[in-house]
Image 1: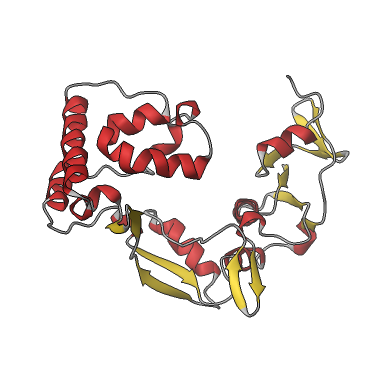
Image 2: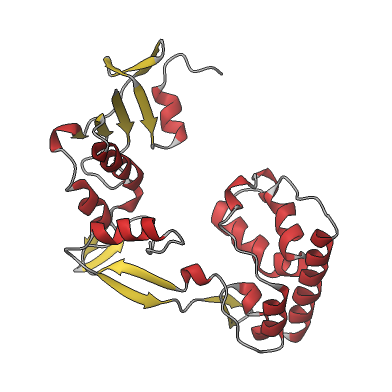
Length: 268
């Protein structure tokens, strides 16, 4: 089997590495002048900055975490304890927000706690899970936490109406805080939420791009094509033609709007 991988970001290079381990005939195409995609890092005035913002390394999956750390074994990684906060009305609220209710003004604290309990009770009574993200937030966290944090935060992050967002992506991404922990936090007993994020790592040198480089070092250079834009992607029966060359399978890791511009005879 011959496989074409579109895009040389961290997903593309990881996929290439895993296919190479299985002995699959693959070719990776990256249109830019170097691998990395959104995980590229730049050195500016002697300081390293990740191009797409701050990335950190953590995972609930021990196998995945070890794979990432192994990729930078020659560089090493710094282990850190999370110390995050949310700026709210001039004060800092510990992260996650539902574990920091005791840091809120009393009226906000009460609203967040009471509606969190109401939402939890409603779910226990069989309240149906909504199909859009805005309503899902209220179903999950209650209207108080939504008003003070979930709505403004997610509207800022996603830049879109939350009602237009599905909920499939939130599964496993937003852990459920036990009601007992939220009550403890509300009355000032410190609790720790999202514990899978409480310890994280970061490469000692080169920024997050070091991970991409570490994985790419294992790849066959003859199968990695940098500066190679895919100009055409044409269905050829059960296979595809990529820039006129036959591939049994094509796996795309590039943005969907770019893929749509590349595919010929794309259904409307």
